[in-house]
Every structure is written in C-alpha cells, then in structure tokens.
Amino acid sequence: MALVNHNIATHLLPRALLLLSVFLNLSLTSYSAPPESEVLIKFRDSLTDNSALSSWNPAKPPCPGDAWAGVICQNDKVWGLKLQNMGLKGKFDISILKDLPLLRTISIMQNQFEGDFPNIRAISALKSIYLSDNKFSGEIKPDAFDKMTGLRKFAGARNQFTGPIPSSLTTLPLLTELRLEQNAFTGQIPNFLQDKLTVFNVSENQLDGPIPDKLTKHDLTAFMGNDELCGGPMPQCPAPTEISAGTIVLCVILAVAALAAIFVAIIILRGRKENPVPEKQQKPVATQVHKKGPSMDIDKVEKGMPPAENSPPAGKNNNQTNVRLTFLREDVEKFDLTDLMKASAEILGSGVFGSTFKAALGRSGRVMVVKRFRQMNNVGREEFQEHMRRLGRLKHKNLLPLVAFYYRKEEKLLVTQYIDNANLSAYLHGNRGRGVPSLDWPKRLKIVKGVAKGLQYLYNELPSIVTPHGHLKSSNILLNDTWEPQLTDYALYPIVNQDQAHNIMIAYRAPEYKQQGRITKKTDVWSLGVVILEVLTGRYPSNPSQQGNGNDSDLADWIQFIDREEWKTEVLDKNMTGNTKRQDEMLKLLDIGLSCCEPDVEKRWEIKEAVERIEKIKE
Ligand SMILES: *[C@@H]1O[C@H](CO)[C@@H](O)[C@H](O)[C@H]1NC(C)=O
Image (cartoon, rainbow, N blue to C red; front, side, top):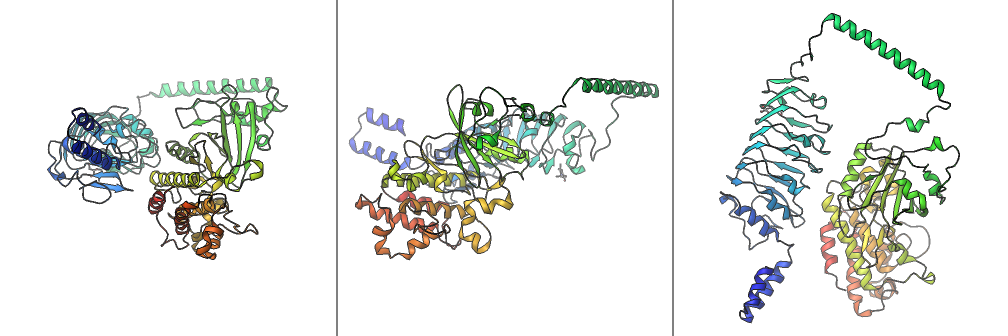
C-alpha cells in the first residue's frame, strides 16, 4: 500500500486519486499490517488447486465471523486453519502464514500437499499441526521441531516420510499426541522423555531396535508393522551378545573385586575427612549452569540485612547453597543470585504472597527485583519450570517481563527488571505531603487502557488458565516513566498452592467466590473493574469511606449508594477533576468500571467487551 501511494504521488496523478488512496490506506490500517486477509490470500494463491477456498473474499476481513471457509477466529484474529479434505494441492508454504500473529493450530489433513516436510519452525508458537493423509515425502531434519516448545500435537500419518524420526520431538515439553503411522521411517525410535505423551502411533514404518522405556506402556497396535522393533508390547529384545558360562563366572569375579576396591577406598576417604560432607552439597542438582557462591541467606535478606560482602560468616559450609537461576530471556545479561545479593539488597515489600526485594548487580549496577514465594511448594519441578517457560515467552508492553527464576522445593524466586517509579497504588493513595504528585485524567486514562490491554493479552495467550492474571490490584501495576502501566504477579494461579490460594489471591475476593465458592473466566474482569473504580475515585477499594475493614466489592456498592447526580462532585477524585470539561468521559469510564464489577457473573462482560468499551473513552 505504501508503495502504491508513493508511486501515485510521484507520478502526480489527479488529486482525487491521491485522496482516494489516502482514504484506502486509512481504512486498511485499522487491520494489523499486513492485513490477515492479505496473508491468507497470498497463501491461497501459492496453491496449485485452491478452488475449495473460493469463499475467501479479500473485500471482507476473515475475522470476526465465519465467512472464510476453514478460518477459525479468536478475539478477531486468525487463531486456526482447518483446511481438511478440500482437495488442496501444491507445496505447503507455511512461512507465508507466519504473518498471522495469533495462529496456533493448523490442520491440512486429507489433501494432496506434496514436497518436503514444511518448515514449521517459521511459526514457533504453534500448538498443533496436522499433516496426515497428504503426499509429503523425504527425510525430516533432526532439528525440525527445535524450540517448538508450545507444540502439543503433531500428526504426520500416512505420508511418505523416510529416514529417522526427528530427535527434536523427544524433548518438546508439552507434546501429548504424536501420530507417525504408515510412513517409511527407518532406524530406532529416539528416546522420548515425555510422561504426558498419551496418543502415540508409529505403526507400519520400517523401524527397528528397542522401544524406549517411556513408550512401552503404549498398546501393541501403536508399534505393529515394524518387524524389527522389540521390547515393551513387542517381542523381547535379544540379549546383546551370546556369553558362555565361563565368561559369566569371570565377570562375577571381576565385579566382586571392583566392589571390594571401592569399599576400601570409601573407608580410607572417610577416615581422612574431618567433617562429613554437608548435607546440602550432597543433593544432586539438575544440570545447566550452576555456581556455588558465598552463602546466600535469603531469610537475612528478607529482614533487610544483606549478607556480608567479603567475609563469609562462620558455619558457612553448612549453608552453602546452589544458586542456579534459570533465565527465560536471551536479551538480558546473565548473572547468578550471588551477584544479585552481593552489592545491596533492600526490602521493597512483604505481602501475603511473599516478600520482594531489590538487588543491584555488582559489576553493571543493574537493579533487579527478586520476589520470594512461599505458597508454591505443591507443584513439581517440571511443572513449575514448564509454567515459567510459558511466562517467559509472554511479551507485551503492559507486562513486566519475567527474566529468570530459581526453583527449590521449599523456595521459589522470580526475578524481574526493576522499574524506578512507584506503583499505581502509591500514586493514588500516596502521601501528597511527601511529594507524591497526583495523577491527572489523561494519565489515569492511559493507565486504565494499558492495564486492560495487558490483561486482554494474558487472556489471549493463556486461554487454559481460569484467571490469566489472578492477582490484579493497584499495587501490582507499575508505572514507567511515560506512565505506561506494567502488570506484575500475573498468571501464578496454576502454581500457587490451591489450599492457600483463596487466602492470597485477589481473584478470590470476587463476588462469585462468596456466592458460589468458585472463580470463573470473568473473575479478572471484576478485578479490572475494581482497579478502574479505584483509579477514578482515588479511594481504597476495601474501605471507600476511609474507615473500617471492608471487602473489595465495597467500592462499587459505595458508588451506587450515592445519587448519580452527585457522582461528579462526590465520587470522582478531586485531584483529577481539575478539567471539568472531561467529566462526562470520566463518568462513562466509571460506568464501565461498575459493569465490570457486576456481581452476577452471567451478566458481567467478557474481557473483550470490557476492553472495547474502555478503548472508546476519549481523553
Ligand atoms: C495405530 O495405527 C494403526 C494403523 O496404522 C491402527 O490400526 C492402530 O489401531 C493404531 N493404534 C493406536 C494405539 O492408535
């Protein structure tokens, strides 16, 4: 489009045409760039037989709606393509589709696609891809699935694939379904490590060798038609080599001798050691980079006493801890927890969830925030890490990115960047006398819009979590120097101890939890509503009349208790209402906040509706 404009302009066509092109350009920019329709049409045009896709009409956007055959939308974006049994022919150029930012699932089963295995890594966020019953052929590169960490389902059955099963499939953390039957795969089945791989089929290939341990639980029919496979449900594997009785005797003698030697060595070593090895050092630690630093006593830090910098205190050895941080982002300089602790540590806050401290990196002086969580010891290491990786992939200007984490059974630390500005709560309720400036209307509106967008992003990215944020409140909304809000403490619901969650998380203060003992997909919308009301009134959500201990629904009740005529003077924060011309917009936003706080979940808006309404409010 830009190119067209440019050409028209330089060739000095009549003014009317120029205007028309400007108009077209404007109307098109309301889609993302390039528009999803353009991407899909380009894909359709890349096929040699695409007659089944004649309903794809570029004059009408593919989302929302169902006018485009096989296009599945979610939140007005293309989320899935289900192009099954449509007689489609040609190469499958998946790289065209990478411009569909929310595309997560593709099925092109039962068509006549041909050529090499598509470069699915072009869309690394895919959750499922179904290619079964086509004419794809050739070897699949071992690393074809590298970094496809969100992939849950892959089906490539009944094609003409050859060569080994790609090893990069074996470590995909979320893979639950793998169908490769009726191809011409050769070699051994690589060592799949997933526990949750529940649907698995490699029958009718040319595989040989032993079936890996984790797969032996699958049904015989999952392996049939591979004459050389053995173990598990298939015939027992032959012993590696034939051994004579004499060799066995010799082996036994040698083994006994070796054991005796080791035994003696241990006794000698023990004798030499004055102290037994401290217990913590004996603990096996997962691989990855780990460093042993000077003792890091988090309890001390929590109490505001950073560990002494140079001289390790006595009894050091017993305290030595492995300080292994797992990094979730490539774009940050690596460090370990010892680095964080060395220079300075300052307690920022201590809440029900855990404590937060600020730590400066020695060399670069960079400041990080470390949050220590107590109520997270019911999830296993694997599950925890998996969830952390999921959070590490989130990227939005209204989310404070998670940089790294630290896992120990008893202790979880999450590391984020430090934002040198107060949180929203401090601005709304801070002590003006101590120099906390009040926020004007444009800033407050910008903050509300940013919070809503950040929350909607979480809904889109984490559809499987009931409350994608779960702990949304003004003190968890940080403000950067351009007043862009950044949410923190999001998406912790799956890893918080469920028996404690109701004591900790804001979501459980929603009316539905009181009424029905449950939280729902709309609970975060309620939290958003509370934040909006808090922003507009400058009052604490739980005791709007500034006295007594209430609960978070009180603010909405309090507002509705006051006559609508008096809202402008009684309800809106006087520190914001300087510009009285804007009061009508403020009241519109107040109504939105109240609707979000609707106690009847059925009547309460979905997040999408709430965000759309907030977007319409003018400064
Ligand atoms: C595996 O695929 C074969 C077809 O090749 C089918 O007969 C069998 O039932 C399947 N088994 C499982 C466990 O899916």
